[in-house]
Image (cartoon, rainbow, N blue to C red):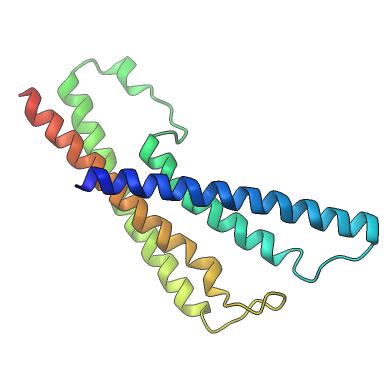
Length: 160
């Protein structure tokens, strides 16, 4: 069930990130057109694209975690040939990622709470909305990594 939830979270985050990138492209195109053709810059020209970019980047990271497409060196298999050692390092890596995401998500939550009463001047929305992307994405990524950790554990126990 957790694997299905991770698949769903990845699919939803990919869809949200794709829409956000399309919106970002449209916003930037509009702002550039306004700035250089009509010589009038919209009052939201910096804040709205930044808000969309932050959410797209953090939410898109959930899919990268699920599909394991984050940049990594991948040198360990060249030095360590023992499958059990590699599996142990993989599980340890997943555990450390989960802990790191938990700490990062908690810090993002605290920052969002601190800025929830502040408003962005051009958009008149809470500044906490920008920072809320971090705990939301971290929570989703933790679920993805927990499912990967459990899948690796199940695979290791079947091999024995």
